[in-house]
Length: 101
Image (cartoon, rainbow, N blue to C red):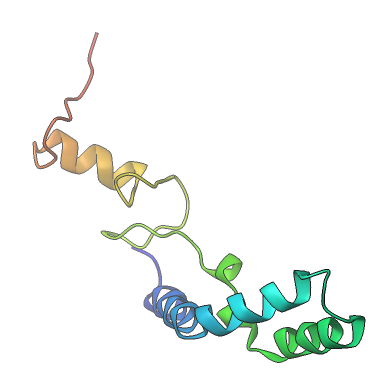
């Protein structure tokens, strides 16, 4: 099990990403638009930099929904390899069978 504080911090980041997503997208579009004057694009870049760091999507860490583990994460299942193996062995994941030879 991961530390509760780490999981909560990541959830806070996810909420901030959702909150600022529209504003970040608008400012990025302005900053990338080559047709606009340089001053306007630079002002958009400064506003983008003044937003909270945790509102950037790259700061969110993929974590297991079951245990909170940050490594060995399967995106399709949204869980770590260890939790996937345990639940698969118990037969709780449809279509998943443990291989043995």
